[in-house]
Structure formats: C-alpha cells, structure tokens
Image (tube, rainbow, N blue to C red; front, side, top):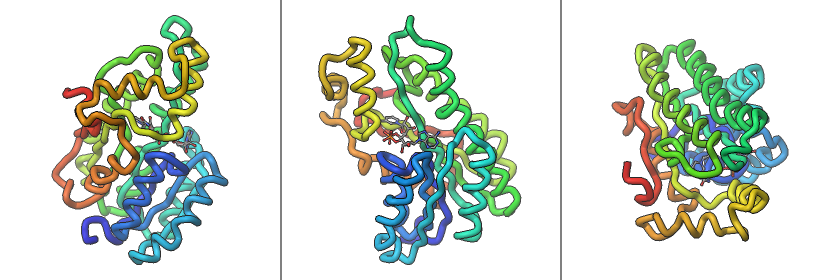
Length: 265
Ligand code: NAD
C-alpha cells in the first residue's frame, strides 16, 4: 500500500482500456485518482463504479471530461483534481487514438487527427501538469503512454507510429527540461493489448483491405510475442503503479517496454 497511498493522480483516456486499468490499480493501492476522458458519460460511469474500490483503501475518486488537445480543458481538469485531492503528484498522459490507413492514402486530416491527440495532447498534458507541480514546489511524476510503435514502424499505421515516436521524444526532452523542478518523466510501451481500441482498428483494417476479419491482426501479431498471447490491460498495471510510486524515483527519461517480448529493442 505504501508505494502510492495518498498520492494524487490523473489518468487520461480512462473511460476504458489501459487507462481505466491504470486508475483502478492505483486505487487498489490507496492512491487518489481522477479518471479523465473525452467521453464524459462513460468516464463518470467508471468513477461511480469505482466508489467502493476507492473506499476499500481509503482513496478518493474523481472524474473529469476533457479533450486532451484543449489547453483550457486540461487546466480545468487539473484544477478540479487539486480541488478534490489538494495537489497533483502523478499525471498519466494515456489518451490515444489510431486510425489505420495505407501509407499512400494517408491524408492531412488523418495525420492531424492522430498527431493532435497522441502528440500535442501529450505535450499539453505534460506542460500543464508540470506547471501545477512547480507551483506546488513538490516535484512530481509524469508518465506517458508510448507503444511498440514508438520503436519501429508498422504497416498501415504510419501517423500512429510517428505520433508514438513523438511521445518518446517528449518524454526524453521533458525529462531534461523538468529535472531542475524535481519532476521525472517516464513512459511505458505496451505491445498488443486487448482493448476496445482494437475493435475500431479491425474495422479500419478491413475497410482498407488489410484484414479479412476481426481479430486477424491480433492473431498475426501474437505469433511474434514470446509470451505467446496478447496482453490484457492488467498485464500493464504492475509497471504503471511502479512508475507512479517512489520506487521509481531515480528513473527519468526512460520508456519501459511491456510487450511480452515482441520487439526486443
Ligand atoms: P482505448 O481506445 O480503449 O481507450 C482510449 C481512451 O482515450 C478512450 O476512452 C477515448 O475516449 C479516450 N480519448 C480519445 N481521444 C481523447 C481526447 N482527445 N481526449 C481525452 N480522451 C480521449 O485505447 P487503449 O487500447 O486503452 O489505449 C490507451 C493508450 O495505450 C493509447 O495511448 C494507445 O495508443 C496506447 N497503446 C495501446 C495499445 C493496444 O494494443 N491497445 C498498444 C500500445 C499502446
């Protein structure tokens, strides 16, 4: 419990998938968690569903509707969290999107949509969290969600890969620029995780003729995973709670791969 108990955390993209699991794992260890997402109704449901879980560890739970590309909304989310929990200690920049497209067909709209949420959203989230931590004078931790697509290019998802390489760059640059304020910046890079994201990715891959049926892409990826299966969100949360905890205080600028041995880089 002592690792993160009483810490004030925000997780974006927390209405489902990896973000929800990150938040729930933090609550289980007594951290206060603001679940934040662009899907206002769903993230409120998630927070409500976690009231008993929070009570079990003495943690507090909050929620915020936020578009991570909108600086004013990000500021309001942080202000809400500080109002509820007294300060901000840990900020997870986890919201992300993918929209597969054949390389030659990638449009400016596709590029801008993905880069805005995965890239600019990460930058704004880091900046505004850091401003709050600096104002508090407490230091803090920023944790970014990268991907195996941060380390190599994959077919039909070039803008997504570019956006996730950007997350690595922001993590490393942020670590350098924020170190003087005792703010660490780390990230984690999941491999293939069974979440709702894949339902849309499957549809998009089929629409461009890159898959014939739902689940095909995941099956093909699985063949390259040393663990022999794709991940569940709960395969990710041991690492994310560690990155939110004092146990990782001496780490900054690093990305931890959590890919079942898929990439070995
Ligand atoms: P998901 O689609 O299940 O959940 C993403 C959440 O982000 C959704 O609740 C969505 O509403 C929210 N979101 C989207 N745009 C937003 C915005 N502008 N502002 C705020 N919230 C927004 O996805 P997931 O699989 O849980 O992925 C979470 C993160 O992990 C993403 O950054 C993704 O790129 C990354 N990732 C996922 C996988 C995987 O296989 N699932 C692998 C590597 C990395």
